[in-house]
Amino acid sequence: MHFDSSPIAAIATAPGRGGIGVVRLSGRGVADLIPALCRLPAASVLQPRHATYTSFVQADGSTIDQGLAIYFKAPHSYTGEDVLELQGHGGPVVMQMLLARCLEAGQEIGLRLAQPGEFTQRAFLNDKLDLAQAEAVADLIDASTEAAAKSASQSLAGKFSQTIRELVEQVVHLRMLVEATLDFPEEEIDFLQKSDARGQLQRIRDSVDNVFNQAAQGALLRDGLNIVLAGQPNVGKSSLLNALAGADVAIVTPIAGTTRDKVTETIQIEGIPVNVIDTAGIRDTEQAGDEVERIGIARTWGAVEGADVILHILDASLGPTLADEQIVARFPPDIPVMRIWNKIDLSGHKPAVDRMSDATHIYLSAADHIGIDVLRSELLRAVGWQQTGESLYLARERHLIALKAAKLHLENAAQLAAQNDQSLDLFAEELRLTQERLNSITGEFTSDDLLGVIFSRFCIGK
Image 1 (spheres, rainbow, N blue to C red):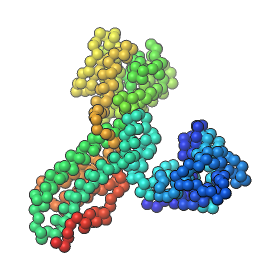
Image 2: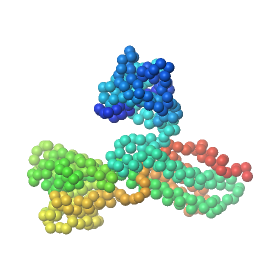
Image 3: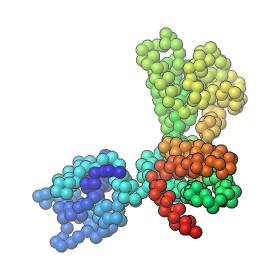
Image 4: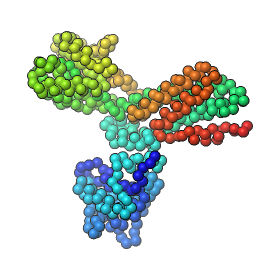
């Protein structure tokens, strides 16, 4: 992978005012900038990994700020390169002044402004982190729930990567046996029988299935859910949003068309971030009060297209109407729909869940907060969430795609294994593709490594 290896600098703390702010430099030669940036006693140096209180100075010796300077000597740093961190007061102006001074002092060594994520990219390129761990850095920063933060922290610590490496090791071992059999057919090894290849393959498939299930659950923690409330005007969409949020975040009135645009509130259900989107009531555009409401209805359908689950709100005191069925007909067929019969306090219905062939029907009262807990549970069930004591991997979509592909190649391998030793070359190819897909998650292990494993574990000359 080619990249610009010149030293880089950037403000490492979030934009805005804060108690402290950090300017970080990384790359060859940054240690040489210490005398120009820090006012230190004569002949003194920054001891690696020790915080030193000092003044940060301009080229003319005037003080920019006072704070801590920490030098990390390669390879014992986050990026694996020489790193200098200047920790001062967190005002945006003083941080920009300090960054500008660093870039000025570093002109001779080619110091430049870092690109987004470049410090972590260098950590990956210098083998301080693998791909999954590097992605976990961003996931930990972006975590919106405690459960997501814990899972991201585990991935950053390498738990997910270690699991993937163990899967790769199992695949490599099986590949090793297949390749040896193909290379030395004169040995007349009854490969599938004597090596328990089918048993090994099934154990690998079970392990990949387990990892995929945990990763899919973790993806819910990372990405959250988009729940769209849709229905006719005055069926209680805004009341339901308020009930789920536990606060009056949406205006509720008996006037049709009160909600003109999307109103989004993020809540947590068992640690999963859920974006609940209230939308304008859907009715015929000729009935809409004005152009603003018509635009709101158009945006409602746009929100519906991006939903993970659609909550179709109906008035239980009125029952289904032709307009409700027309709304249902426009819902995307690939998005789960739950029909929420609201206002049971007026209809006399009991709170209940009815899982029918067309959809899950839930009877509740948003105004009286009756049946809300049932709705929360059904939302998690609809997206496949299962509470488990196992640690979850905060997986990304590319991880799930790679695991799905690995599962498919293992399924093909199992079909080939059913043909006994007649298709060992194709069997070996499916294992190679499986390994390739798993490797893409961490960015590790090449075909050259496989040759090393074969030569180290088998006595070829025997």
